[in-house]
Amino acid sequence: MQLQFAMDTLTTEAALDLAGKAAPYVDVIELGTPLIKSAGLSAITAIKEAHPDKVVFADLKTMDAGELEADIAFSAGADLVTVLGVAGDSTIAGAVKAAEAHGKGIVVDLIGVPDKAARAKEVVALGAAFVEMHAGLDEQAEEGFTFETLLRDGEASGVPFSVAGGITTETIEAVQASGARIAVAGSAIYSADDVAAAASALRDAISEPASA
Ligand SMILES: O=C([C@H](O)CO)[C@H](O)[C@H](O)COP(=O)(O)O
Image (cartoon, rainbow, N blue to C red; front, side):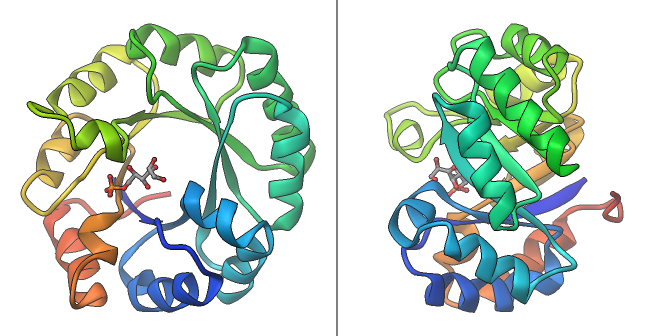
């Protein structure tokens, strides 16, 4: 299983600093939605130029204009771009068309999708590289939140999936056991006093070596 670092910070400078500290321990560097909205597409270019050996993930969460939005993110340097699973099939198909033109990939974020396992099958059939079983920051803050359902949905989907939703060193082993391709960790790394140590601890908690 691979480790993805989601940077929900607001400036390119902060993102470059975080990425520099965490990069030795992670496979995928994600520019979070708030970062891209705040700093713009140039933040994607800056991260890719600083880390050309890493997979750069642009969390656009596109809902419409799939081909256009994906195209501008790939042109800026992204390797993977997200489209929302609640978007229409034509939006996802358009984003996949842009990915094919660039030789890159679309990830469908299933945040807010009621039946994640069923939608996962549909969007992979449309050409998505994989899906993200995701509970967002607001859902995580709701009373009684548990991400166990994300793991069950991932297993039930039968398609390649990542998991995001407040993953920590205490929970990452369960994510791996679910068969996830990638564990996405944001606040567990960027909110830590020692960012490098937090990323390293998550890496150490993954028992199998990183694979492509
Ligand atoms: O995608 C995310 C969220 O919607 C804000 O952009 C987070 O990056 C994702 O949830 C991972 O972060 P943590 O939940 O803090 O691990």
